[in-house]
Length: 187
Image (cartoon, rainbow, N blue to C red; front, side, top):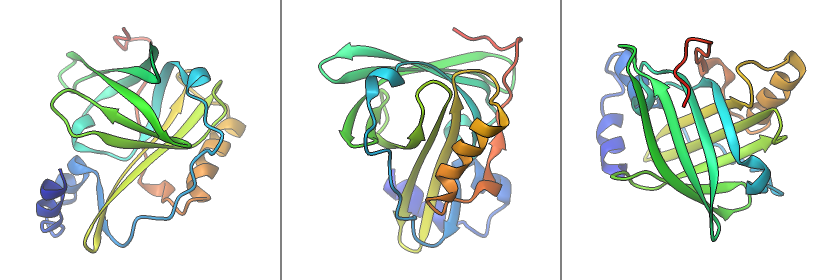
């Protein structure tokens, strides 16, 4: 994946649409972030709806994105992501995750290199602010999500979710809203 990111970084002069398909690529260093130090995976289990994200290749054109986390035992969690493709077709992928440091999970899907999932903040009942950044030379590739237990968030709770990114010097202006609605094919 690092090789692919390095190759893609060479094309920073390419169209903005291409860049957003990969993840948010920009010059600069990944921020020094602070994860939720008392993160507990047990109350994190259950369904999360994606409300906002940085656009990235593996979610390009998707809406109705949500994840269901279930206990697999022995410290592992099943990650079942579902979404709707641009053509209306439902899609899903199942992987697993485990905590590797406070607020940091290693997430692995079949056929993919494991990735880190940094929980910056969560109250477990309403929101979760999640981030990852990969450094390749002078370029960084960022991934970020605002997740919710419901299809919407009250303003005060949404502000708290955003504050986790602000506190970690992560750009809020890059977020794109993910459509969630009654017509979504939730599993």
